[in-house]
Length: 195
Image (cartoon, rainbow, N blue to C red; front, side, top):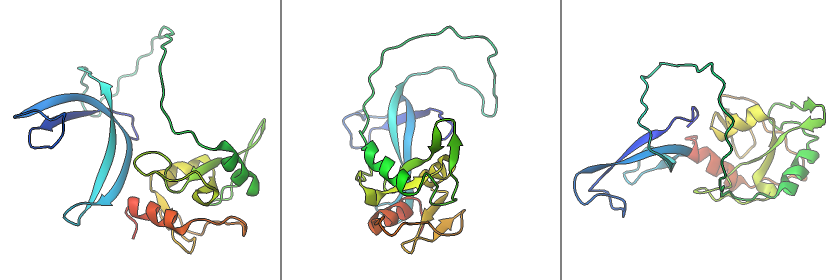
């Protein structure tokens, strides 16, 4: 998922799905991994779940570890496409960033750009499928881009007492008017394997 590499999917006849073959195995094509999270499986063990989106068939195979750079200039190509996405309330994210004066609640960094300070409104419980987190102030925190990526990838999480766990230490800076839903913090911890 982090490298943007496709996954080859093969479906077996024992899987209960309308896409599964009636017997044997069938190549389903290339899929992109768009999300990953941890959960508890039927037998009680921790498993990694992924969300896959079909990305077409690709017969070009390269050996692992081999990187070939193309130094040529590609022709500019314009393609029309349709994108389905969850619409977020940008005013709520803007309110959170303004509340913290665009300073990251984890590391305290405020990124200066030519057009002013920059920060990102990060959802604690992810907004899209399959997580279905809500778009509310109680589910948003203000992070710099680095901390946002690390938070989304589970490099660190946040305890209910707002202390950081994982690869970062310290605690989340929280304004007294910012009421964070502790259930969302718990969801983030569980989905990234923190107890």
